[in-house]
Image 1 (cartoon, rainbow, N blue to C red):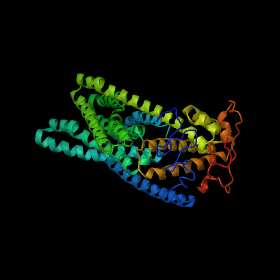
Image 2 (cartoon, one colour):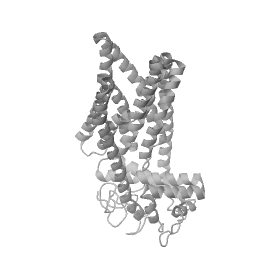
Image 3 (tube, one colour):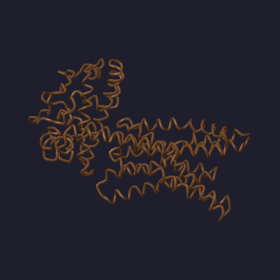
Length: 468
């Protein structure tokens, strides 16, 4: 899509000089497309959202309980092996790198922040479930190989030829589950890298407790030298190792989710997984080689791949900004947002300045409303771009209508405190003729919660009067 042209309609049709088009040639949300949800009333849509919300809460609670059980089992196994002091030392050491690593991925996720509960589950999936199952499989493989080839050979076989396949499959299964069952939360490469990074960070956290606790329990070099060397290797030199491996799967799934051809959607995830296994196996082998082998693989393989992923992520962030900037004028033409808000929404600096001003002048509650509005606009813009590419199925229309309703409702809540929009300009001079829009009354025909839109005259917003 050319970023110098007006945004295309949700099904790929152009919308030059006017609001975004719907499937019948009218603007999305107008008479040609009908009310949101394929003809469903706002009350029906609301009840459906409530039911989905309740199911989501129940699923989250059950999932957290199961992941908690896995965590307790791992904790018990570690206590039995290393004792309370060993586990304490291992946990304290493992906490040092996990904070900066997770913070880095959250920093990347600022344009379209993922739901906090999904990120929490991603971390616990890696830290609890994936680690526990991998521990069982890897230990079993090592024991079987040791019986056949001896202890040293069994350990090598498990570390190089078994663990990478098992661990990357377990970590990648969370990303695949998102793609299959929560596709609306997984819309591209950046999401794939963020979720992969958080899952990998969780896995590395629990695994670091294992290695640090074991080093302390062994008491090598006076009980402290070995712990320090393990901490430097895993926490300073390679804190991004596990996130980097799984990022290969995340990048492949992110490309696949927007691919038009079925063969690409099927092959890319497999190729990403195989690349993750290869990198993981090479890194484990370098640890066994030690010395020159470790340095060589680190410098020649790991660092280039790391910088490649950084470049991909930065490109994707810039690409998301271009997509959002291209879609916003159409939103303003359709009356979904005020034209004066386009400049505030098309950059992270503008959004942050808006939120700071609102928080200072109107308080955290109003700032939260504005933040929800910004997030809804971002999600709708990215969804419309994906629909224009033709990479989504028939369910995309329902997603579009729900997100559009969310944009309108969240904006109405923000407008309910007019200072929230006026504060955005701070000490700058607003555009000529700009005034903070007044919120419509709940009984007004244009109240977004009614699920009803009026047709607009050509070239005018679909609301009863201009927002700006």
